[in-house]
Image 1: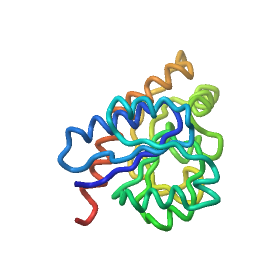
Image 2: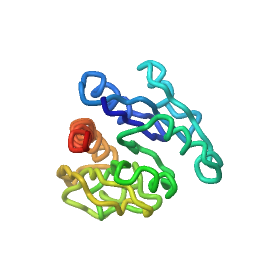
Image 3: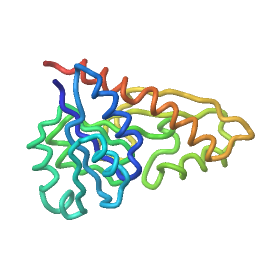
Image 4: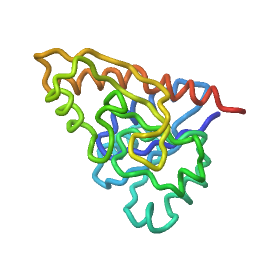
Length: 191
């Protein structure tokens, strides 16, 4: 059984979707959720879904090895960033090479980089009158949103769309595709 650790910063809808999907899967399960936000709704979702969850601060991930030690103990086959807003530390990336992925709410390389998350992305898509947008699932490297692309899914953007309607379309794509892509990655790993 493959082991998944999820990092999230906010409400945790993607984390919840992954937990529920893998509760029904013989391939793997979400064994731990980590958040940098002690008030994140993802902690409440984990409590309801009976999944271990911990919050941590900047010192624990950037200055000490607390988060790295937690990950080593959890022995994840895959680390999934699902709305995690901090830059992922290089020491963890080196410890888990090609085992850290992220979902981004745009078609990278467009609308990526520091500060480009959530509604900031959707507002930029609408302001620039894009005709399409989507999601990108990619490997994480030492730069924001620059790791190798694993999967993209697209949706149309109409002239009447607002950042809220675009967010809704993106959310549908995330719910549909993210767990399936995670499962494919787990299946492609050596036993």
